Image 1 (cartoon, rainbow over the protein chains, first blue to last red):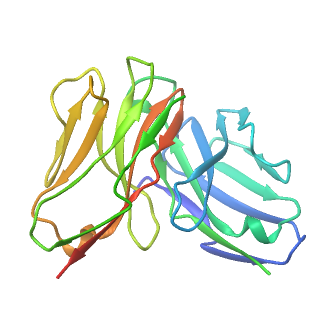
Image 2: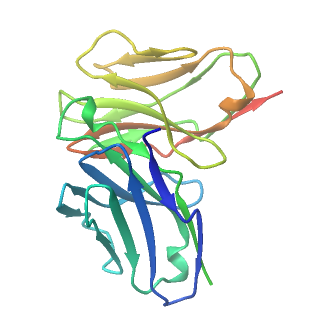
Length: 116
Length: 112
């Protein structure tokens, strides 16, 4: 089945130790998104890629970076995790381009990050 | 500013009852898409239903239906014959320019 896959489902890191979360998709969608979701809150968009075109949200900290080496994979790098970065990180995809039902976003199961 | 408001932070209903979750939004755009997403305790976000703003007919997916009032910028979700598996956080959202604007969510408990 076509899907959005996130590995690992749980990630533990130490304060200040770089960590990478991965997302892959078999949907062949053009757009991939990374969200941060803290407990009982709505997901917060960090950035998204439309193909190779990177779009950063204005309030996304510099500590968060992303890479998309090909259509199928997208990575979230947290350079120096702080305690406040502990959260669920959701990856999503959409067909694109802008306009129409192609904008529907499909979410992966998320990676829960714990910072010790 | 584009916003989505869900005025019910938490709701509980008995199994088999019908429940309506409210949502209002604000945008100056004329063409957009509205969504209800469900996030069960397992945390995977699942699309429940989608509505095109240019369509007057309300979307329906099995037990889930919406009441879309464009002029009032209202987009409520009705769940008929509620089931225990409907217990989840429900997010109302609309998409403009590839970006989702989420409401804060309504936590729905279906009681046995």
